[in-house]
Image 1: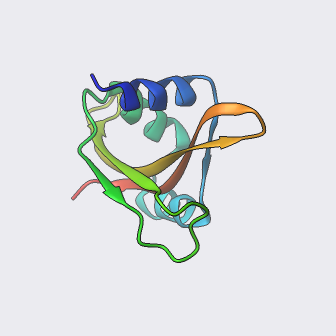
Image 2: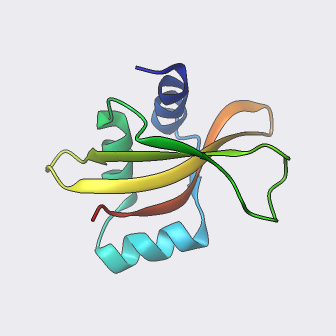
Length: 103
């Protein structure tokens, strides 16, 4: 398991995560809960893909988004995309940009 995935899981398990408005809307549209996303990330064995952000609104010049596809405890495949950030002295804070059922 990668160091990045371990850091993401620790942030999630510590409650150091937040959902963007888009991710919250996707959750609602797919009938998912925050717990479904947490379970999916904790169950993940690998990061599916890491991409470089192309958003003009990003804070840093080099920002990476981590895509995780894994099942929740009921076996439902879930797609999530997020980034590790530092905020208010918390070293690893995971901000979910997208969270929905995987296609």
